[in-house]
Length: 298
Image (cartoon, rainbow, N blue to C red; front, top):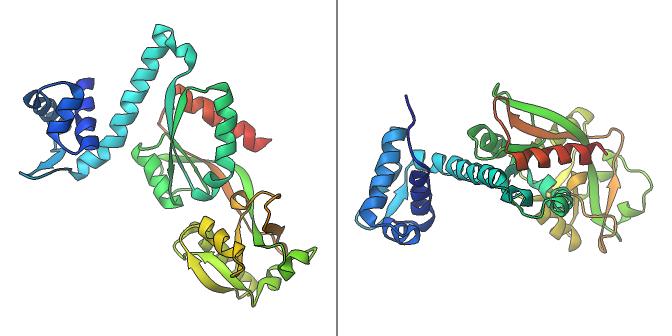
């Protein structure tokens, strides 16, 4: 099948997606509504499937349309970035990076990495998809994200996982909690405590429970949340303690919460980069990827 479309077709498609209708999209693009419809029809013909479901009251994307949208955005962003480079404006290092990151890495580590990157390339924009491990892998596989920061490998032969660093699980508790005063902690010390944990569907929870089952350690998960940031809020209120990856833990100067290493044994996950084996990163994404590798290795 030969794919044949114009960039303006893609811009028309994204305008309808973003504005929710043909009339508003035509006004935004300064073209007539029939001309916009022809653009959409040409793209649908090229794709071989309808991109929108049209009724008298609303326009909504089809499954194919929703899948095409992130790819279309990346295509236009990369084209504009390449054009800027050729015309000399590219000395400003403009562009956009789309990456999928597990929330625990996005919470504390990623902002510091982006801050460092922006000092060198202040005109590059970021679109961060903070997704669960499985959803992040799928976003990279679909091309919605250029690469991902994840802690799970993948059975998908089209994805490549590059391990960067081991991220140990640590205890988070209030500074006035009895466990905060212990010099060394083992997993047995946590038995009987009210534990605040993420849901069983979480990859972090799976890693933790798999290891503790082998140690015959029984933890009391009294509270269950979807996000580790929520668990820290409950810890601050003194409702319990939390076990979370070190990358997601508050900084050492936190006024209320202290983090403690847990040994006997160490339980950890491996953080790394997920990329499509046949994919090619945009210049901006390649720069940021290289900086991430350098940052984590140091």
